[in-house]
Structure formats: C-alpha cells, structure tokens
Length: 129
Image (tube, rainbow, N blue to C red; front, side, top):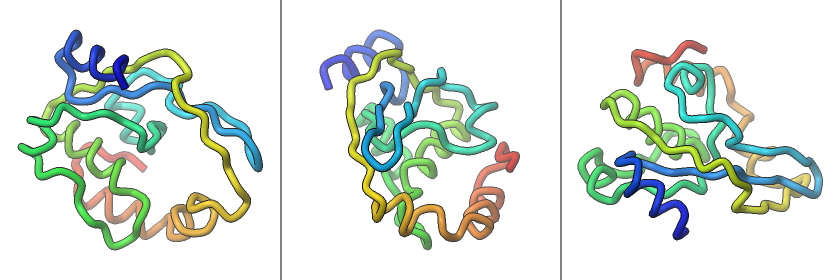
C-alpha cells in the first residue's frame, strides 16, 4: 500500500494501481497496461485492488451500488475519467490472487455482459464497447 500512496502523492493522480497476478484455476496478469481513457473505453483492465485519493473519492461520491454487482470499481474509474482525473500505473506485481472455478468472476460478474455494456454506454460518454 505504501507504493500506491507514494504513486498518488508523487504523480498527483486520483488513483494508483499495480499489476495483479492471478493463479490457480486461471493464470494471467491484470492491470499490466498504463492508465488510458482510450483503452478503458473498451473495457476494464484494472483490478479492484486500487488505492484512491480520499478527497477525490469523496468528491465523486465513492463507490456506487450497481444493478449488477462486481462492476463498482470500473464504474468509479469511468467516473474519474469523465471528470478528467488520471490514474497512476505502478509497473510491478504487488498482488497475488488465487482464482477458483467458482469465483465471483466466473459465477456473477460476467454473466450479463450485454446488459453491462448498455449500462456503461448510458452512463459515460466516452465508452466505446
């Protein structure tokens, strides 16, 4: 968390995130791209393990409960972008995450993909998917 805090302070960004390494049922790196509104317009590649600048988080109203759970982090990141804030990429693996076959990602998060696309297109002008 220290590296996240230092990144926010040093870059004057609204948030900081590092690379997350998934292992177990599925292996992959998440969050291995720099912060880019253009890339985020096509979908989320940043894991929920993010640190936000508290003042900005409060100003924007924090996490918002969504109709479909599991997407509150991407919604908040989109809200940051819509309000012209930047994020800071920490190019290191700072988190390991064990993935089970019955994890939230497989069971809940991606089941209503088209409905999610519509929700995000309606909420944010820059969304491209």
